[in-house]
Length: 303
Image (cartoon, rainbow, N blue to C red; front, side, top):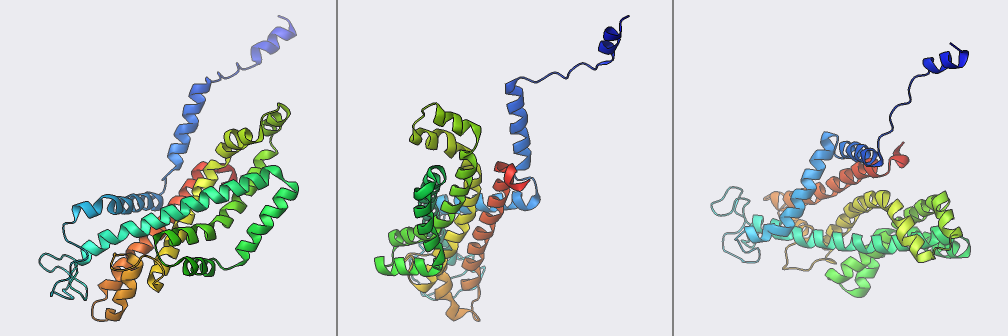
């Protein structure tokens, strides 16, 4: 037997390469194992989904009127017909908590969506265009970041007047610069890759490159950061309602409920503890879920 044949016999056969569909299934299975892998992440997902369901369908399930005043003021926990008691005006506390979830979550989601759209658009354009366009846009972003966010929100809401629309606009504008910086960094990283260079050399129009090539490739880490930003928006919304610049009474809102109940902090602490606890749960759950999504959707950023 020749030396070549002997060497060929000693070479191990090459492993079979799975088809593309199988490789995609393996990657999908791995990603599914990464999401909600730890018990804090599972608990955070459960709390976030539960609070969203409470805000969405809770008002239809609770029969008590959150605005109806009765002579039964400051009833304790476990009172007949009022499981969580009543406030100083005799209004059912359970109904107010359930109905108060919707305004806070609605403002938080709407403001975060506004910030995500504006910030992602600015970051995409700046990161892809570069040069003077990038310098101008990012200097404006840096100027907005130099101003304290809470003061910027208060200023915008004070100018536009308290209410849901002004609250959404103010919070969204204040949160957009942070998302713009992240989008710009991710876009600049992707714009230097071969597939974007090939699109440019092939004559692909800029809007198509931004929408079809760059945006899908930065969507994962942006989504994780947007979920984390949702917690900041909720904190702003609750804080402004506490200051009287957010959701206006008599509509129930968790932030305003804390402000209204602090007068009875020693005699009826549940009026403060319950809405504050639910707000804290939502904020913490958003942070844990966002961190979990970041680990799953942006493995390069966590390696």
